Length: 177
Image 1 (cartoon, helix red, strand yellow):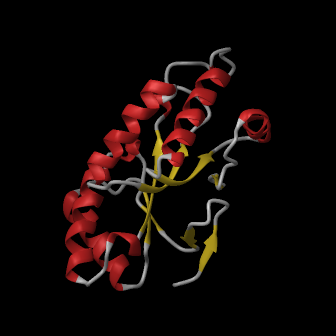
Image 2 (cartoon, rainbow, N blue to C red; image 1 turned 90 degrees about the horizontal axis):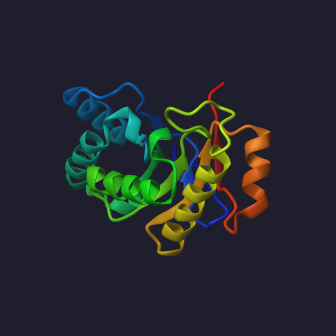
Image 3 (cartoon, helix red, strand yellow; image 1 turned 45 degrees about the horizontal axis):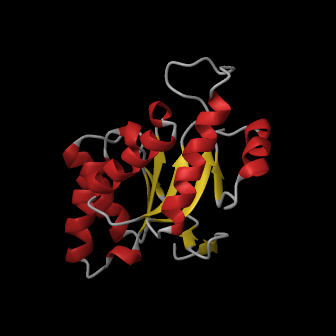
């Protein structure tokens, strides 16, 4: 359970973690976080669209203290929602996620989806919105508010577009199979 991998930012990410998609009932979130910590899990994967960041943050605050653990003993991942793509929206969404979790920083922050809410997958503004989001995430990374940045559900085409301009390479690419 303690196995980790070093990301390109130098931060170590646990190889096993708890995904929290569709777990947004308060008592259920408390149970999941408590049991996960008791079983040795130290990584929690969430996203703003899951609607559970506040619940996870409260549960972590309670159960970390109860178990003599500190913030730096856990790895928290969250994701930028498709309707928050773009420079300003990304910053607002990130700040909201930090507030929701009750955290000063997030260990891994991902662009959840290469598209944007309300736009077709081939809309001409999508590459620009993705670029703005990524550049904002690079700023937050440089400020130390994000320990590693990455993407989720990106295709090879999206990755090639990203690698053409990014100065901070993605530390992680998550996809659902």
